[in-house]
Image (tube, rainbow, N blue to C red; front, side, top):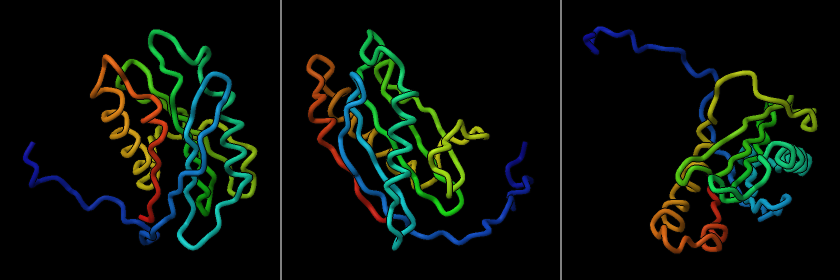
Length: 164
């Protein structure tokens, strides 16, 4: 197929891009899991604590057990996204040496406690994927670069904050 003959007009965004605040919140322990919690909110808006609470509660249910196996490290991250229309929780954990596994949940913005599996095949939005990219780089630097002595504490110490 000739790429110049493709119709690349595609759908047009109906809302112009606006920066959002991405902030590291805290390191949390969920059973035997060590997890980093991130919050995302529209720039200039406060992040609602109930969105983080719902995401952490969902992570307790979603993270596989046991946390540490021959295929899992017991390390991961959770992204709580307080978006205008919906709340999102991306529950992510490292497995199989170099894979990030994920469960994506969402709920109406006014009912964050109702997080349920997201009804599409989305992997994340542009703001959420910035966290995933940061975590990927940290994983490479602290775990994969030194397979004989992975630095799990160094990985967990890395924090991402941005307005993008």
